[in-house]
Image 1 (cartoon, rainbow over the protein chains, first blue to last red):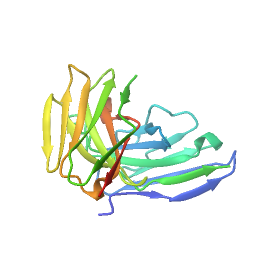
Image 2: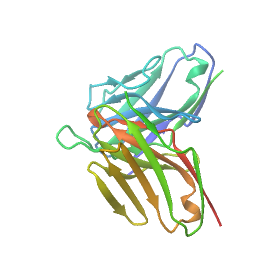
Image 3: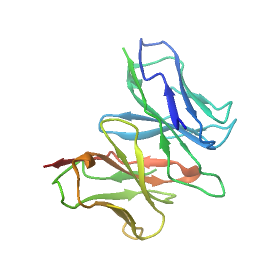
Image 4: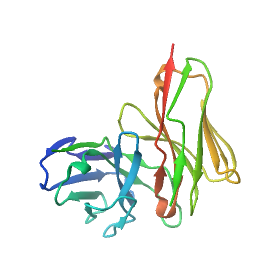
Length: 116
Length: 109
């Protein structure tokens, strides 16, 4: 099992460009999450999904969109990148369900994004 | 909203015991998790406390006191490989997590 994988690992964008980050998990998890991590700020939740076809906003959703068309994939989009979106982006998944919540999340290796 | 406070850095020597504290102010609190992160890599889950008391997993233990809005992670028999950042995180609805800013643990020989 690969666990949680993220594509790409690194990316440099110019201001105003768009891109999509892909997260895939092979653990049949229902819940998936996107975080960003900035120096000294810890991880902050951008968006999350509790199942195929669902998405919800987290703590810092502005400037990002997400889609969960397939259970195993969770995509994070930046429509018009800004320097403030320079960060490390982590995807995570959890075997949590509505009836059996879990706070154990499995993280991918991260995508290091620089916006110039 | 939710906020968690933890020390930014802790130092210790190999073989020692270290405690990393976490205080929180949250609404809709379900429990406290702890994660470890090496050199900016993928965070990994260490423990979760839903109820007051001590949970032990090998060399690591985690404690929660809901009445004091306080928890800690205890690391025993420290090893060099324990040098990493440690994050406390409060659990919310839909199994979401709000993370503290992290504590960098430096273990010296």
